[in-house]
Amino acid sequence: MNIAGKWSGTFTYGDGYTPEMHGKTVQFELILKMNGIEITGTITDEETKHLFRSAGNIFGFIENKHIFFTKQYPNLCLRNSLSGEMEVFDDEPAYDINYSGQYQSEGFFAGEWEIPPFTLYFVTENLEISGSGT
Image 1 (cartoon, one colour):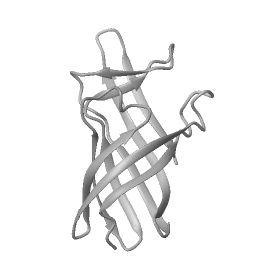
Image 2: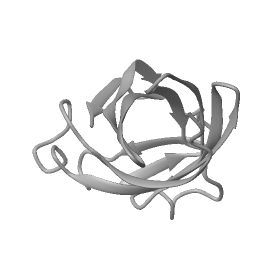
Image 3: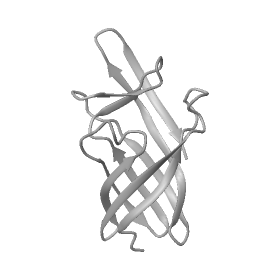
Image 4: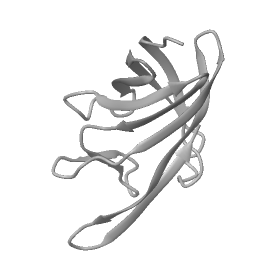
């Protein structure tokens, strides 16, 4: 299955997010390249595209009708729990966002994403971060 090209879609915030964020849907655009079953590409979304100078990257594979990839923003990006706004930390590496999905019909994938738990070490406090959605 060749899925190279431009894709657009949405993702939705799931468990682990505030009531204001839970269920929020965000549009994205993905540009994919293929080499055998391996996929690479870039991704931008409406929520964060104004925060970065470049697109996020994805890398993964597609096997039969199943797709698996990891998304990484250019830098660490977190939501401020007080303001609700996204903040970028230029000196910190991005975390992984893992996606797995299945081809449903012509031009349509459905699946789930997850941010595996990780800990950020700041001078004043340590934060454990995770999240998921569809």
